Length: 66
Ligand SMILES: [Zn+2]
Image (cartoon, rainbow, N blue to C red; front, side, top):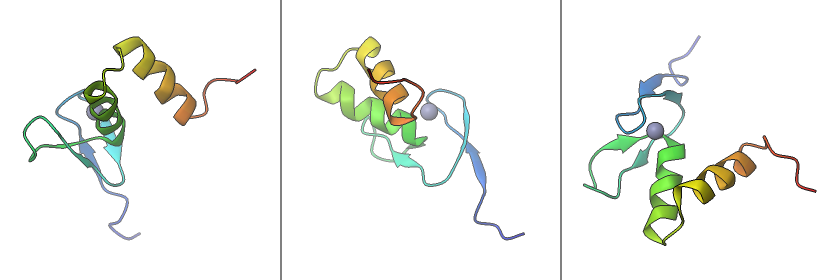
């Protein structure tokens, strides 16, 4: 097995993630999970937490769009 499937703990939400991290917009140096990266991006354009949750669920394909 190669090392390209490493995991890390996201300091923002505390979840373990793997793959490429995102750079936090709050300090431009903390590496956070892709979901938190998306959340911060959405937050920066004024999307509420509730809407962020919905968007993330759609991104992850957990919601059936009717
Ligand atoms: Zn996170």
